[in-house]
Image (tube, rainbow, N blue to C red; front, side, top):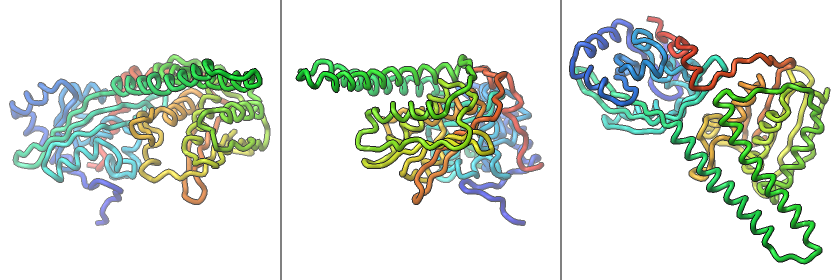
Length: 404
């Protein structure tokens, strides 16, 4: 029999009978019941195949389902991770799983027989499309008559959000405000005043845009944004964005080429949110480009829906590509915010009803595409993330993956 496909962790599954035997044995062991009940956070016991054989009530509440529905599922399957069904082998076997903190904590705990701690970002399905969790996870070996793993989860989403807010206001905003103050206090010749005023205006525009971007992200995650769909002139939109970002601090020493527009030049969308989406991509493209590099934006509406393209000449390694749309992930290490591409995906897919994707190769660089619907559905469900899981409890329990 051919071995199931996997790009990372072992794909093999236990039989339904074995899972039930393990569950009953653990359930009837008072020490195990008390151990998991005492955890202040969601916790479970996994078999050697990384499948849930026992869980506490806090895990069931997080998954939005009952005990019988999580037995035999892996962590990503129980939480409805968007990558958990990419391969028939399930959670832990796709390419994206290689950078998942949960899978790494479990597998390394099994391989090394030692406790493991990781931070983990999970993007999961909800009725509105997708939502995100930032987690801290622990995997601890538990040797009984077989090797099990005690796996615990702590939701650190609020901690990550505070960290992002601190970086924005203590780094980005402070840097821009300091630059603005320096310009305004500079002693200049009368002939330099127009240039000084222009620099001050550019810095104040960046300052306001930074604050608005994070304000919109918070509102989007809470389900508080209400798109206003109108007719948009694509030429005016793209030339305006190119003009703004050509004066951006990240554009120094780089080039923004004039936009190329093909096909009908009007689309129906929310102008503010679409500008925010394309602006994030242009800023990211500038940050990724080396001095002298050119950022190019284009649009075409020749079939398949109106589509915007943002290109830069840099290449993203595969490990980066696998995490690009995750909240809190940044290529800029500790200094990064990790909200740009996540915000792009959130606004595009939940609010503009479109799709965002990218390609990145050494020869062609990186191209992000934002495809809008021909006729956007304006009557969309905009539940906040905190309510989305509660409204769709069965979505978190897709069922057994091994056919048993």
